[in-house]
Length: 351
Image (tube, rainbow, N blue to C red):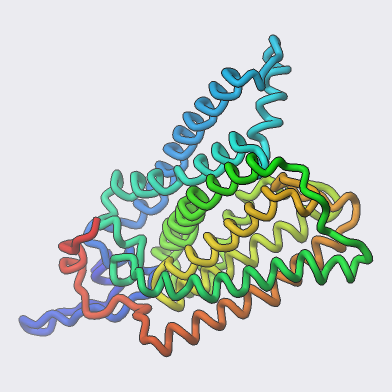
């Protein structure tokens, strides 16, 4: 026997079918009647193609706006390209055009991911949400509390404690006008949760379920899915240890998000942490109180600040994982697909 039923261990004794054993989130594709081993990989490739198409459209719109606003003044292609890269190459949280195009571009990962699943026939699309094939809104709302707590703690450590260790003061007078900050803040508050959710659907959803369809061990799947997530954050390809410690910071985030996704059986807790973390980070950047509004990380030849920042993430995000894991067990949050045959899953709603 082959296919999802075989993997789930479904057997037939006489006329009675034995239901498959419980499946964790990363193995959910094995329960779908339309699953074939190659479909997750093709879905990933289709998602990549659509995301490139969508982001290209978003950037072209942004370029048109930049030209209309007189921000692209060069008559030569190299000159215009250089000016475009200055606006869109790295997200500038203090520039309404840059931050909106950057966040919306990433947010298009969500429709791209859903199209990838739909085109190859991995349905219902709600398989990406949780083992209950839906977003568990109450659990998502609860997860926002610990996410906010650890994010605030990390921010205070970054702005108040680390400067004392490094012998300086990181808070400076704002350079961004109040009106510009308010516009950027509104964009961040509205779009960042969509951007964060899109990344969770793509990496903790599609990528993890792709590896999980082929591999059983959850820790291995979590590590494998963290690698492309860290590699995708190219803004950290800077000098002085940026690549090492800033990328390690992103990888740690991916491991924590992957862990809570596995332990809770859905992407809600990952979305909560991602949305709160990114919103607070972009708001802090937009304020310019840290001396920069750019998401690019450069240590100026000194890797120590980024190492300390990584350690701050360790002492804040790891407790988040423990907090969520214990809370999910206390609340009885389902983290396995139970007593569901492939046919029953195929007839589910919420696509």
